[in-house]
Amino acid sequence: GASCFSNYTSSLIIDLGSPTYVSKISFKEMELFGNWGSGGKIYIDNEQIPSSTCNDISNPACHDFGRQPYNDGNADTNFRSRTFWIGKTVKTIKLYVWDITSSSEIFIDDLKIEFGEDSSGIVSLWKGEGDAKDSIGTNHGVLKNGATYAPGIFGWAFSFDGIDDYVEIPDSNSLRLQNFTISAWVNPKGDFNKCG
Figure 1 (cartoon, rainbow, N blue to C red):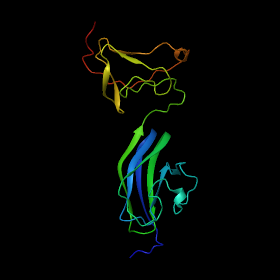
Figure 2 (figure 1 turned 60 degrees about the vertical axis):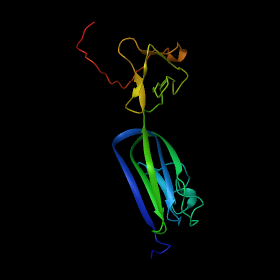
Figure 3 (figure 1 turned 90 degrees about the horizontal axis):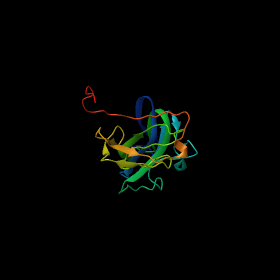
Figure 4 (figure 1 turned 45 degrees about the vertical axis):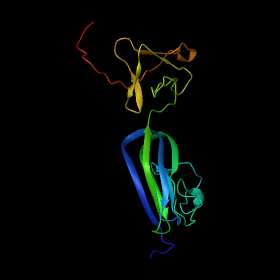
C-alpha cells in the first residue's frame, strides 16, 4: 500500500492558445473514496489565484478547493459548487490536486470557463442575456418593435428582423462622449445584395 507520507499530484492544464479574457471559472467537486488529505489549487499563467494567502499545498488553509474538514476520512455525498472570479486576460489555467495517499480522489464535473471582454473603461455594456439591462452602468434599454433574443457567441444575444427592431436606450449624460468606440459581435443573415 501507499505510505501516508507519499505525495500524489495531478494537474489539469487548459491552454487557451492565445491570451483570452476570462471572467470566471466554475465547477462542481467532491471527494471520492474517503478524504485522506486531498487539496486543490488553481493557477492562472502559473500564478496562484489570490483566493488564499499561502502557497503550501500541504496546508489546508492554502486550498482553493477540496473537502473541509481536511483529512477527516469521509467521502462526500454531495457536490460542492466552486466559482473563481478571474477578470483578466490569461493563456493557461491549471487545476492542481495534491494528496498524501493514492486512496482518495477529487472528482471535478461541469467545468465551465466564462469568457468576455475587459470591462475597464467601458461606459455601458448590453449583453442581451434575456434582458436589455446595462451590465456595467445604469443605461438600461427596452426592446422595441419585436426585437428578441437568440443564441449568441457567449450565451444569448439580441435578435433583430432587419426591418424595424431595435433596443432603445434613454438619453444619459454618461453617453454624451466626445470620443468613443462602439464594439459589437454581429451575425448577419439574409441577402445583402438587395438595394432599397
